[in-house]
Image 1 (cartoon, rainbow, N blue to C red):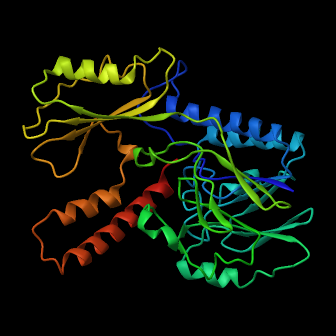
Image 2 (image 1 turned 120 degrees about the horizontal axis):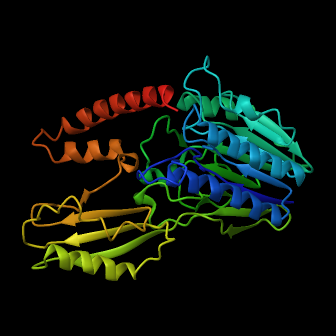
Image 3 (image 1 turned 120 degrees about the vertical axis):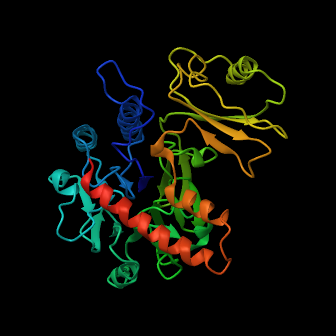
Length: 377
């Protein structure tokens, strides 16, 4: 059996304030288009099943276009007789047991096997049992739910779940309802474990993989591998699958000491290699002023060098900064929990109090972010 594993498509993610001719957000539209193109490429491989390991949508109340995009994808998969396994991730899960999940809108498809109601689901396709554990309300719920799994040795057994493996806990995303998956869940009982949540493609156990997100969703992912995975149940092999996505490029560091603003602009333009008018790339560049004070860059600094890009992120280094500071950043790409932690570490606070303040502040931020997700599209 050939299985394609994808995750974290975040349909509905927007940003950068650039629009299409009809006024739609350009980044959001490109993500929709790339998702459909990815499904079409996956169909060409003729897999026996497609697994989506969580965060199909970017929010618990998806936008109309996000719904129509997944409905189009389900139509394409149904026409090709390819089932889709999909579990709820922390972004698209309802935050209480009394809210309605977005999966209720699409579960009518006969080729869709969803898991979203804070409980274990079993899907049987051919000679394979797919054990589905969606994002849960509480950390302990994973272990309680896991106990319900019964391994049948006469079948291939695949676990599909969403969370952060403890083996990479240093890469914590610090997002709402992010729970850790330990060795009591990620066991060798399964032929394959399909994980979602972490956006970089990575093997975390001999049989456990993150497919990663198809798209670059933040600049923190600039070095990650993007795409999907193909698992062969007969050969027990895992291979990378390239899928359409918006490119993200690091232009490196430019030494700006003694350069005029115009010269800095020219250096950036040269490092870009002269992008075409059709470019939708996201790019990052670091301006190093070394031992001089950073200058206030003019509001129109990016006007002509970024007009053909989806986004250009500027990072500033100078004698006043211990680490590069971000200028001209879209708010949708900020990791607020991480930024708060960095802020606390730089404050003249008693070292014993810092972890307590950081923990309390982070929990408050997470609560605010969770409430925000419940009231926004």
